[in-house]
Length: 335
Image 1 (cartoon, one colour):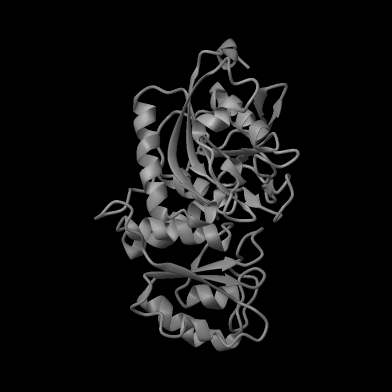
Image 2 (cartoon, rainbow, N blue to C red; image 1 turned 120 degrees about the vertical axis):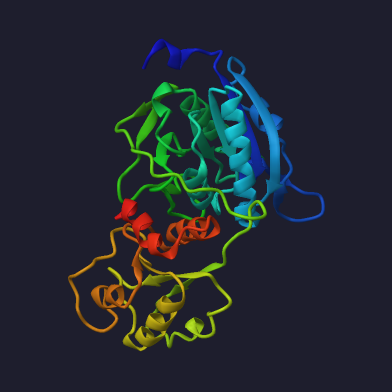
């Protein structure tokens, strides 16, 4: 680490979107809801007083209520902050969608200032609340010079993850987040971010055409034992694209094949694995409904992307007006 990495005067912008990290008990309900401001979050963290931190309330929503339009707006604020010369940016939000919002931000954001997403699995009023420690670790990572040009990062539990690899692996555990295919990029040790390997940034995706944040309609249909594929019916004219969360390395019931072939002629249909770890194969199996059969019928391989991130990549390119002939090529970065 260089001396610059330890400079307490580096500036950090914290953008608060809500989520469990900002939740406290409400008077009108038996559970918790987002109530804390970004300034409240920062003030509750011992160790941040010596860092030049500015907090803004960007949204105050549960993670499940965030939209792609919110993230397009967020990217605009991130790039504005980068132009203004901030040294690092931390985004706090709910963990329900954190792996998806971080990935979508990574597709769009092309500033130089590090962007680090974090959140909490326990609300601020809980015993052993993890939000303050996660926020401190995120700020420490965002002020690390080696975090620049690594793409968007996710920091929880003192682990540093790449947005493209991280997944929420448990519904309640404070150690819910991991990168099962690659492991973390690094860790926080004695308040310093230590990255164990560098990560090449992917190609930029243009922001959506037309009204800001206008989404493309893309849905995920999951293969399951004995499914008739009824959810594939009537999708033409209702969606712009489809992601199939297939069995294993990219397989579906043979009864799905004619329907998927017809859909692939009408729109981009991406073949992902419902397992979420490991690639879609290309030429190992040859039965009807196998990966080689489906790819030959016009489906596009998601590579190593899980169905939810494959959906976001397809959404981003459809909203940007990427020609259909180029859609398959953009997934090659994740093969």
